[in-house]
Image (tube, rainbow, N blue to C red; front, side, top):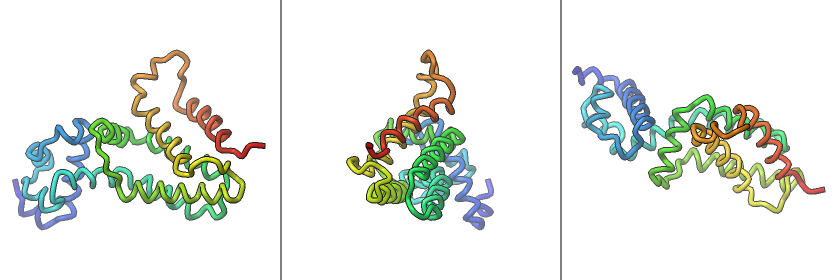
Length: 201
């Protein structure tokens, strides 16, 4: 193994470590992965893992952040470009999150392992996006565009949890009679969700 070449290209080594770690964490979860196995998979020494990330826990956080970053960037751009709050943006946000999970099954498995292992850390990206979304909902409530008698953070939590659970539990509930396709569920969920947050006449 030529660790000298890897050391001289730190960005490439870091990417190899993240790729290897993501594959192992997706397959086995955080607790089951040993640094020795990760080092073998990445083709590096354990000391390089510590050099680049400091600990297995920090590597786990980096893997989760990288997996979530694409959605975070796109969703923050959507919020920043939206202008005045309206209900259409909330609907678009639900669709964007649902399709992100559908198109990234590895991320769904990372989320599932996070929940199963009782990981209570909230990444900076996660917290920032939820905060921005809740603030947008609050502004829409003040303008009378969304019902004002519900917690704005709960509005975000409802669609995040529903979409996440749909994909995490899909191997189980797809056997239920009449469940239908991903898009059929999304359409019905949007009907229920959007009617639920619409101001009462």
